[in-house]
Length: 177
Ligand SMILES: [Mg+2]
Ligand SMILES: [Zn+2]
Image 1: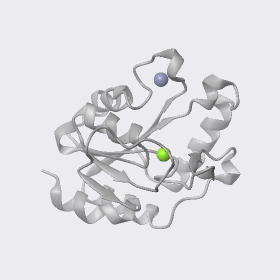
Image 2: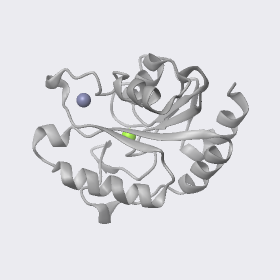
Image 3: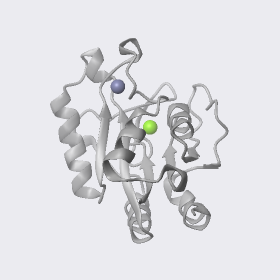
Image 4: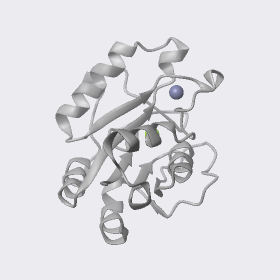
């Protein structure tokens, strides 16, 4: 069984668009911009034997304000930039009551089964409470990238709080079993 790092997308790998102190996804592939240090961070994790899985809530699809094809095009661009094993999308909103929308752990659990991942040796990283709570619920350790958004804090205590993905790499490399 492999170990993995489950990575949120917007605000974790690529820059989120900030409006009213809250993060939003880029609207087009052309707006996709990696955060400084992310490419090197991913390469270090891959080199240390981690699979890399991006798990992303994209409720604008359910809300009708974004096309699934555009989300897929943004993700295809991300796969050109980073050596990710897969990108998993939840296209739903809260009203759909699906098992995949973070803070539920469905995307992590499904990917772990598909790719043969040992969750106890894995880590989830994200910039919102939903990411930390999903990672905790799936049985991974969790890293919270605290960007000071105007929203609730994680219910689960993160194992590490940092200001960006790069800052978490020494801890992830040192602390995994
Ligand atoms: Mg995010
Ligand atoms: Zn879903």
